[in-house]
Length: 202
Image 1 (cartoon, rainbow, N blue to C red):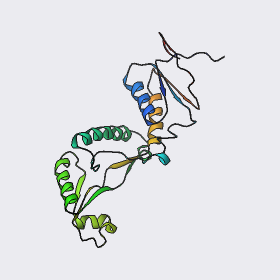
Image 2 (cartoon, helix red, strand yellow):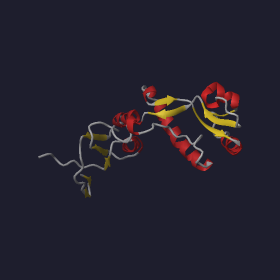
Image 3 (cartoon, rainbow, N blue to C red):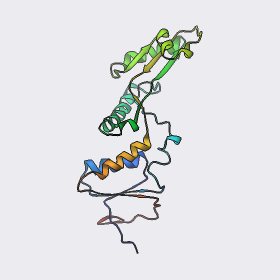
């Protein structure tokens, strides 16, 4: 019969959220015994896997449904991911740079994007306002004889995508390097029951 293991914290699920929590608790708290349980045989194999997720690193810059306040909150979280990954040897397996833009066509949309650029660009140094000729250099098929007024907000040289599975695996690896911590990750393990006692969780 397997001996009961008492843990201070048990995390259920080995996606990006569960593994990030594992890393944060392991590195930045005095919690000593942390277990992560994942029912599949691999970390981040479902929602955080590339085939099930757009892998977008949302920064709030070109998401036109975001207010400035919301965008800056999202930016802060994205910056945390970038700062974390930049210190890793396998950074290029986690973060990617792709050009991205949002295009406004017609007087109303063009006016909205110009206003948005004025409001957002002081907070986003990489944001560019592209006029027709600029858009044509980056994405010529977008213009393609179009006569309406057109502008774009673009980010051309920043991290815009993240491999969430690789990020999740790195969280686990980094958590396990923390000294004097008992980090236990169990894969292929379904949870039947969690019992709370004065000593912790089992």
